[in-house]
Every structure is written in C-alpha cells, then in structure tokens.
Length: 111
Length: 114
Image 1 (cartoon, rainbow over the protein chains, first blue to last red):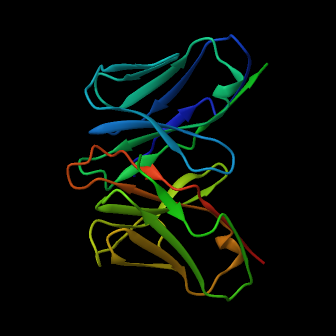
Image 2: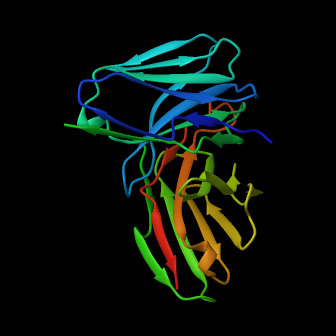
C-alpha cells in the first residue's frame, strides 16, 4: 500500500519565522502536488513538481521534489498569518488516477 | 479559472435516507473524483470516473455509488445513509489521461447523518 507521510502534523509559529514541511514515501511518483486548504473549503492547488530534484518558488514558498521522486518539502520564509491553513501533499501516478494524499500539516501563524 | 461546484455546503440527513451529492465542473475535464475527508485520515478516494458512464472504485467504495451521465456532472449516492458516513465530501476534477495529477476541488459538502 502506498503511503505519504507528512511531518509535522501540527505547527504553531510566530509571524516572521521560517518553517519546513516534509512529505515522504517509499514509493516513486510521476508527479507530486502541494495543496492548501482553509477551514470549510476544498483544497487549492499550489504547485506541481515533476522532475527529480526540481525546485519551484511561489513568492515566499519554496517546493522541492526529491531526486528519487519519493519525497518533497515545502519551505515558507517569513511566515504570515495568511499562510495559516492545512497543507496537503499528494503523489500521483501517470494519468493522475491513483493519487495518494498525505494526512496534512496544520499550520497556525500567530500575529 | 477552473470551477468545481457542489450542490450543498451543509447537509443533515437521517439514518437510512438516500442522499445525493452533486458535483459540476466547467472545464471539460475528463476525470472526476469523490473523496471523503476525516480528521487524521486525510483524503480517501471513494470513486472516480475517467469518462462519461465510466466509473472505478476507489479505496472506500462500500456504502456508496456514483453516476456520470454527462461529462461535466458526477454524482455521489449514499443508498442508505449511516452515522459513520458523517464526513466532509470533496469532489475534484482533472484534465485527462496525460494529466500530471493536478486536481481541482469543489468547496466540499459537510454531511451529518443523525
């Protein structure tokens, strides 16, 4: 059974701090997505990484796909209260039919 | 922008009732999905469909059925609702066979079964 483990499960930090969220698996994925979900809403796609070792930046968010395409990280620089939410990683096979979601990291950024 | 809409944001039903959850996407996506989301368990796939009238079981199909009569619409049916089906239900869609896996989600339906 494929599993995606996210860590930490919960993170509470002060505004301005940096943080990293990890997503690990023993399986190889053809692509990996990161989503952010706010309370009472559906997940919103942040980024897709496809190539091993790929790094993508989205303003203060940096996403990295592991060389072996089994793991990924999300780094947030100078976190802001607006970054608060549930961050989900998802690993997909070709065609995207079989997508495995991690349980999520709940981030709370205090002003 | 891709838009995925779900028929209800909140729904309260009684045990044994038949429940219909509707999902519509406006981007001509071939794939559509139904998930449920429970605290600590993440998103679990119930059913997905890769074409009209086609459906495949996901990881937890028991107690559910689906219907896809039109490309843009994917319905989830709870034949006889039970309390353990109280959950957040999320519909999603994605492009097609060459999709890299990106899914676009609706806002969710929070279903409570009493």
